[in-house]
Image (tube, rainbow, N blue to C red; front, side, top):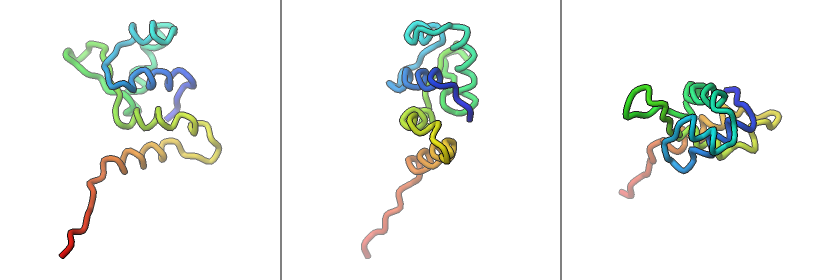
Length: 106
């Protein structure tokens, strides 16, 4: 994934509280151009970092995904040499969603 720094991470941070939001509100909150935010939201959704939510299919509302939360939490390593950011995010998401396997005492 190719993220725009700092804007995409600022968008993810704005969603980190778990609330739904739209481009107009984000543009105001982040003091950025609304049309630019409108172009970034679908990109972040394509990466699986955000998801489009209702009530209407094209309402313009988005919410952060688990993958988006992990990406936001790992912002500081995005541009680190030798780090595969996609892999870091995928591994963290897989680890958090993997069923726990415990061995019962016999």
